[in-house]
Image (cartoon, rainbow, N blue to C red):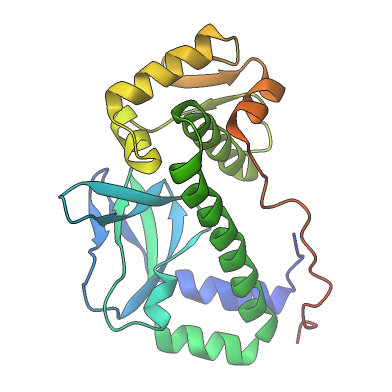
Length: 232
């Protein structure tokens, strides 16, 4: 998206000087915990979620290596969401003071954080609209495409086949469906020739039809970054 200078890369590397290992299922941060730190996800997959009044869980987003976690901790005293490991993970914690110094020294990095948060906001808006207005099949299809696209950013060899890495319950908590309903929609997508599944892997066998079924919008396409400040 943007080529960082050597100085910018070194500044970002300072955010990763400390490491913490997490096993699958471990909670990095709980909703309403004191909001003292932010994190860079160095490896693995995590999710952000909130608990609803009826005790159910709503997954808000999935996180992949390179993502910055708990960015809302910049402006709140308490964490706004729970962040949980979906695989063995390595995270790098850093405090807000370090981030404040980084953006003062490198304003383009601050601008890029704004860009990434706006992409995330648009994607969350899409998911909100989907939860209220699209079919169960469309929601599951959109989640599969999102997961494949995020994995492909990290591994350009991924084309139509990728490791799912999520349970049907986790997909359900992201799409507002039960695990049983998710399983039914996955089988329907298979029966309609859009995907194939084998040993935890998903293959897009008709990606064009899958994209139409999902009403999917790629929020990483069509970016206009001409306004970014010059690197210092």
